[in-house]
Picture 1 (cartoon, rainbow, N blue to C red):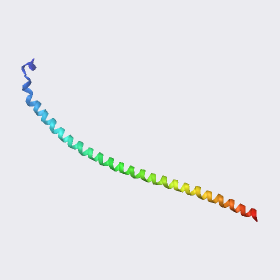
Picture 2 (cartoon, rainbow, N blue to C red):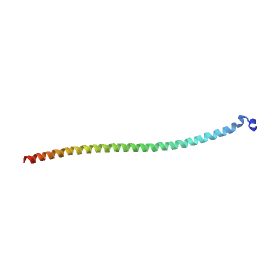
Picture 3 (tube, one colour):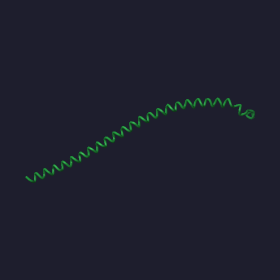
Picture 4 (cartoon, rainbow, N blue to C red):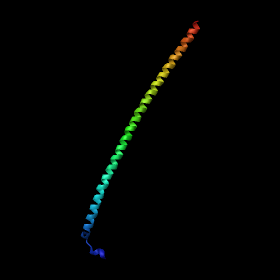
Amino acid sequence: EKLKNYRLSDFDDLRAEKRAALEKHKEEYSVKYNEIDEKIKAKMKVLDDGLQELIAKKRGLIQQQSTISDEIRNLDYQYKNWVNFMEELNKRK
């Protein structure tokens, strides 16, 4: 019954007060959110840069491994040729 006596305009000041409080909190949280977001972005950049560095090192190690494997194959081939040559020399004696 009592509510019927009130008009919507009777609550305008309360709504305005709540709206002002909401805007204030919205701005405060927006600032905090942006600060946290910047920290997260900075950390992600550091992590991404570190990951890129690790990937580059991995590529370098893979290249070294490939070079070493090629050298081992080459040395193995030279060794086998040398063994064959020595066997041929021993047969000729």
